[in-house]
Length: 89
Image (cartoon, rainbow, N blue to C red; front, side, top):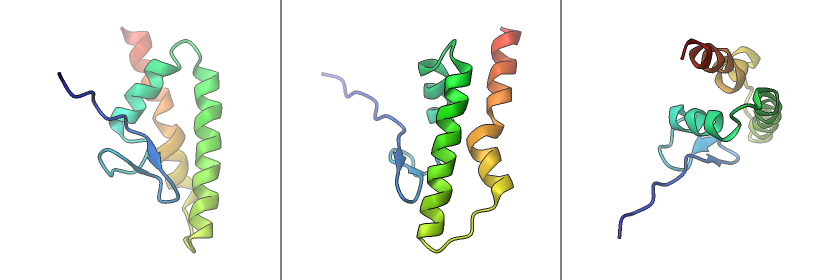
């Protein structure tokens, strides 16, 4: 029996990947999300924007001061690259 790969899901309130401990959404999570939301890029953008807002709220709750530019890049900045690569293919 082969082991199933562990999904790259967020661990709250730290918003790190449960599998690789990278800031979520990590690279593998991004690939999973693009696959899961294939053909529904607007829904993916809404999901990630909602996740970003939850992460910001969690960080403030932990006493942190999240940088809005960093948070946007982390949660939404890679979407245009994902769309561009899909169009090129």
